[in-house]
Length: 426
Ligand SMILES: Cc1ncc(COP(=O)(O)O)c(C=O)c1O
Image 1 (cartoon, helix red, strand yellow):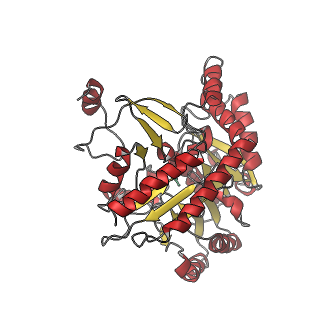
Image 2 (cartoon, protein in one colour):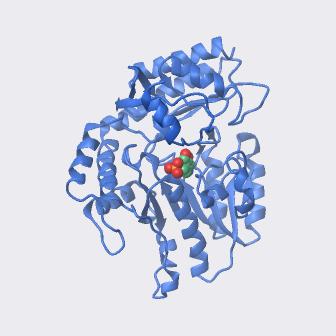
Image 3 (tube, helix red, strand yellow):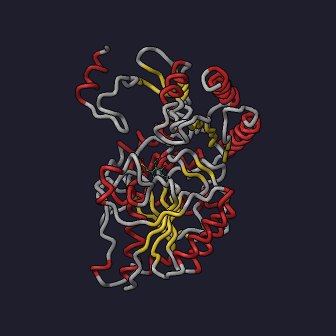
């Protein structure tokens, strides 16, 4: 075993990885564009954008230059009582593409904390107004992160089982699959008409971690319309779907009904630095505009609005909003959609789907769809042996590539998926 792997094994505890896992992590020495370069000389296509964060390819020179310049100008400063241009520029830019009702941003540093902030903001909104509303509603299968609040509003299962007694109560609606939309709407109406619902939180149009499950904008529009008419605070968790992933800047852009609060992270810095934003509408802000000190939003992190992360995000924004990048997003969306049409011909594929740059398919097994489906143990090594990083969600194979991927590279990955379907799954 290489010395780095030996040290890694004795010193480091990796995320979502059993401590006694036999497979050793691959040592990556460099990354550029869609490729990860490994210590043993391989070039692996990062077809999942390293946990869905990378937008413009790895080590993008424009972002790297912005980070270097910022690091030697202003590295960090406490964000209470102080501010800086990179954060202000970023706030202005992000608000210019967020749903129009979003007025202000609150910084934190990852997707879970963006959600944590969103939920706390919504709960305190009601408390500051002196209104007793406690019910929180989320969607079955939701994943909003790994901190306690984020776990509580997410699906209870494998990931949350050790903590189940410590999570606050949440009502979960059935996932609004096309065959049960009306039932979900009726369930929601029944709950909110009791008048005690404080919050509705959702991953708009695509649930990421639960298996890239997609649902229609019509049903979400209706749920949001019902929520608004019962004065329920709506939180869109766009941590995964933000910054072009679904083909538009935000999944909420497909909807007529807008959220009161939006959580974003992952792609915000193009996948280079940890950063997140929770934005909110004027309605939410209004409950905090008070001389009463006890109604302050007492939340913050040491690295809140880190200037280097903000500089990375500003550089990423410049690339994202360029015509070249928007054309790439359209090319990926079109190419995925054609592949999905072809996949419907495979009897082992149960649900091929795409939304923008996200493409997914479930493979039929007799275990049912789940994160722990045994097929994942075949899928991951099969693609790695072909120098493709496709980390499945159970029996769901999905692709969420960096936007710089070429059509030829996309097609090379599709070829390997075809090979898997015929050789292994067939
Ligand atoms: C929709 C959604 N919300 C929140 C999170 C948590 O983000 P992070 O891993 O940065 O804490 C994720 C992560 O996958 C996510 O997909």
